[in-house]
Amino acid sequence: MDSTEREILPARQVCPSQVGEAMERAIAGGELGLQVAAFKDGELIVNAWAGELRPGGPPVDSATLFPIFSITKAITATAVHIQVERGLVDYDAPIARYWPEYAMAGKEGVTIRHVLCHRAGVPQMPVGLTLEQMCDWDWMVAELAAIEPVYEPGTHNTYLSMTFGWLLGEVVRRTDPKRRPFEQFLREEVLLPLDIEDLWVGLPLTERPRVAQLSFPDRPPLPPEGSLTRKASPPEVGLFPEVFNLPEIQAACLPSVGAIGSALAVARFFSMLAGRGGVAGKRLLSEGSVLSFLEPRPGVRELDETYGMPMPVGVGGYWISAPGVSMSGPLEGTILCHPGAGGTIAWADIETGLAAAICHNRMVAAIRWEELGESILDVSRGLTA
Picture 1: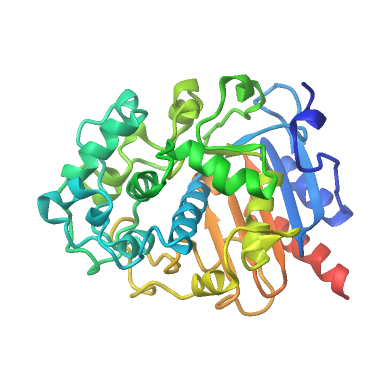
Picture 2 (picture 1 turned 90 degrees about the vertical axis):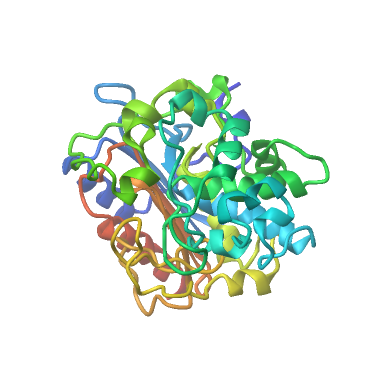
């Protein structure tokens, strides 16, 4: 089956000159391979690619897929919002209402909203975690149910780098009347209803040859031993090429960091948010819900204890600004976004109807994303001039 038959979304290249030139400069500056895609009011306005699938390898094309790391959290959060709108989950209810075992070790007060806001106080992964264990959903949720919080829920910003997805995903799984595996729920209730095929949390083996190989030539030093940053993302299972290039990791359902997809598919997902819950006649969430996600989490300007810096998280689990991407006009009140490790990013502007994604395989980006972001904005502005 060729890429045209495989993809529901159009695979044609749409590369306005300003975007193409910005991509060429990115490659010349050291980027390896990348895709850029954008929708305006549900219409495709950018779908472009450049560079190599791996060093010295074949070129990136429309069918190439990229690991997108924490952009996965936006998809997982959306699954929770669907369950809330169906009356199956309450944001202010404790997780233990739906997952009784989670009430262990002083976590009976942790609510769904605490997790969405990254204020649940449980960023740490199980001690001694192996790759095999991380790929085992039942093992992970049992271990996370037993973990003792670092902070009392709701008192500190503690970014849930990896735990976010299992906590919310298990709630969705247990409240799903069909009791589907979480990856199946995402596919059937979030992605396929939006005509998104080339985006997976749990990649089929047949699709693996299309995945761009990650590289990390300029990686920073590891966080200090014993730090909360290191506990939240232990190096043994961390967000590195030697882990996330592995076939078993790509095939697993890692609901915070494991999604793999094309920029076109990711931008299509965010076009649903830019369309206030719907796109191209397909509605996933109510407009009121999407507008509510723009509210900042409590203490949004305070340092996040996991990473030691403020993080612009909203109450819906999405970021409410697009860091590293140049934006014209005020950010607050219009942007829903999620970045991913190494520099991948996607965002939606609910005021202008613009949604965009930048995916690449060199961690961290060889150049900053402002130029690429500005080129997308330039295309969007030209359509309304």
